[in-house]
Image (cartoon, rainbow, N blue to C red):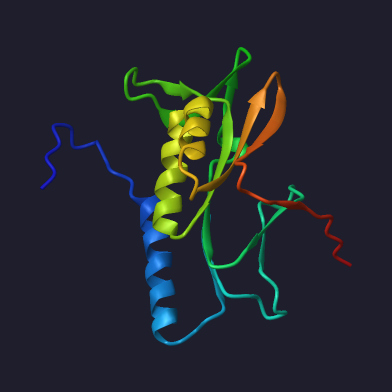
Length: 177
């Protein structure tokens, strides 16, 4: 039972809820002997087997990015977007609040992308790491070798990328006639 002193306080379970629901849907597909599928629900993607062409599933991070992840039997969650970052006086603030101060947290992270075995795991990790900030996120994911990740962040007004050492990405140019 949850007790709240202030009725305006809410709990948002969107990120773990979406991840959990994709994991449940994947279990249903596996129960019905479906061996190749891609489930996409918002920013949570679960891939099993190969695509109809017989290759690993291709996930492009967003339309403006040339980074493509090739996934086989993995889940990925993307947390954060460039337009959700607030910039004021050359400082970057997240849409998440610092629990110690009650103000938006100062955070140069733009995106946290986590690849692991389940979307419940990737969803919770991506949100947690996003709220931890850049340095603590890097320390955490490097100390857990089963986690693959990409962190996009601003440093000196330049968008940079940090990739875990166990991650292989490809930069591809797409042409759509």
